[in-house]
Length: 353
Image (cartoon, rainbow, N blue to C red; front, side, top):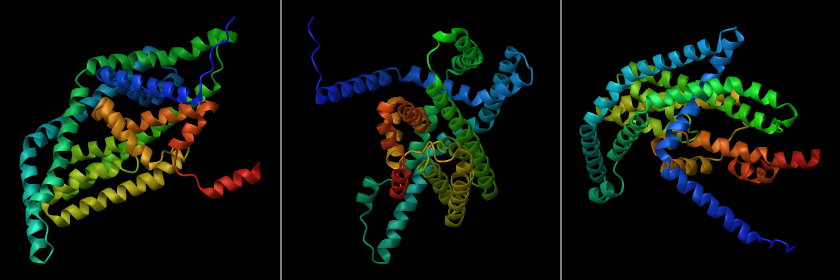
């Protein structure tokens, strides 16, 4: 019998690259379906803790799922009530804000020219247009609105996922000796679940604090910017900056530089407390990503799945990283995706060994 031909390392790498390209192309083509499925899974994972709490209290499974999903619908209606009109109003006034920002940019260039700093206005506005930030925010919000149009399908998927989450442990137990070894899989699911739940709680607190601060300052659409802060808090390192820029620019246009400075200060204080004090205390450093990987994941998932892909970029990349950690053959990929490693830690590990 003829022996199969050995595959060289270069051919192996080429085959893996081709598989990745095919998978990415498939995700790109199936983006509308994938967005709905990923959002449903994301929402279902967040809903699992209250579901398990009700089950532990002796509540029937169907009743518990009904309570959780009903609460989810109520929260969604409240958010739509407060944020929906703000999004529509902001989109309507978007050209006005863009025009004001361009006018202020021209005035700043004229002021710099008076004090001897020569900046060609035309070239600056062509290469860097601050008003484009507002346009980006408008397109992002409209993209999110389009993703949430299939709310009924999304809720149905969430309901079925919650029922399956309750039934899956019993199915696994029924397999008895035929069940595969799931220790790594359980650890992977536990870590992903813990990450998403803690990150969601911190993001909610961040959004509420930003909303209250902007309301006190009198900045227009505080609920909208609080929603942006909540969503972009899932993107560490650069997410808070992306969320803060449009609010600071709007404060500049609406209230002046003083209020813009207070707005920026509020974002800095909230994100420093949440990102450097609260979040590390409960989450630790076990699910970190390097800053470069965070930025690249934002670009890649945004290109594949659109605005929802940008917001879920870090959770999706975290899932890839955790999956690589679970397999000894791919742990090197998880190390590359992770944060910088302190050389002293390597020395300690080597001395321990």
